[in-house]
Image 1 (cartoon, rainbow, N blue to C red):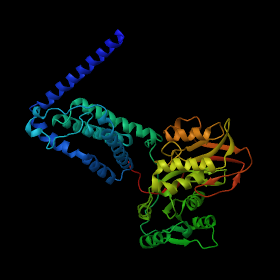
Image 2: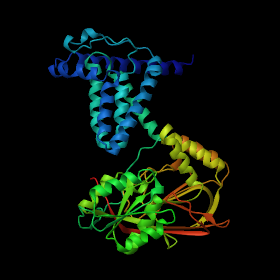
Image 3: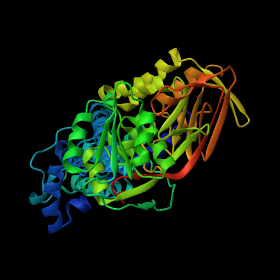
Image 4: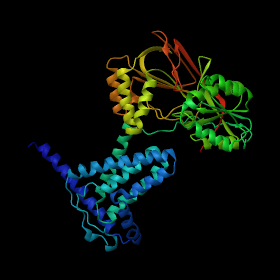
Length: 497
């Protein structure tokens, strides 16, 4: 054997032995520490972390807060913990055998009630603690910081009770944190945009405790909840006028007629009906109240009016705020999104699947389906010409980034959210799917995203269908979109701070 190789191996062995001696010395220093505080706190803490009971309990509390970032953090933390537990117990603990520390060095009051028999390296408790804390922190940094402190105490408890050496704990921390970070590459966390900085604009509107001056237009064809909403409005806003669309009535004409005699125009229907009502409300200069009577009710959810009770209370209290609208080709209104190509089919397919398999997998399967079966469109915008199958324009910035936008935290940032998947290049479909699987779509050269106040494009192969707010629209050779900044006053609960 070469002399240099033997020397290198000898040096590595010396370093390993030195680290092992340091690890044992630190363990003895902690184990021999005559601390009553450690005697009282460490055994209950380490027992609470057995089988991840502590983290599951905290996840339940976070979910019960009904705060979206806390709920997302709870889900991400539990999933990270589950994957980490599998990797640690079925893989990492079998790589290198290491005996547990001697319990004889630990004070009797501090010893664990049961003696662990599995391999000491790495610490499974520590791995699970780090996975959960980092997972939560990716969605909510403040909660993640507090949980990281608790995870550190759990790691200390494993040393103080004689279950692990410090090196085992640090190895567990590394595995758990690594799994959580890799998970964020596959399913990126929702990061709230820094825009806008301005406070939301409240509109002066008198309280209407009995609904006087409110005209509610109901589209019974939008969903099955319309009858329940009408009953609630009649019971709590007795002076409101209710107009139900007949079989020969059109939404656009009915809301325009209602807006002329109303102080407040209210609409019960899906996003297509809400879009028509929003245009009529802006034309007549009156506020809009939205009741979620459709299938998905994206606009109602994004203004926190996902129930009739919230909208009714906002009308009674007179809380209205200004939101943006998008003007399409100078004669139509967009409240949520507009799209060309196969994007409407993509959304419909994804929403049908996501309740059964979750949004990440539903997005992947829907993208595959759309890229295989969707008809691409060639467009020109700015100085670019490209072919696309998935093209999306949103009113205000949507979250998260990528091609599965789910919600908006604001609808008054004065921006359009434009997202395009380019499919005209060589191997483009395979490259898109690979990037999507690896969680790197946002970095792909085929993915284009921008936030701008206005956007226009022309279709290079003749008129193409433009869908707006979930409704199939007309064909256009060119399209322009311009933000109408804070043009619409809408009743909603006060924004959460």
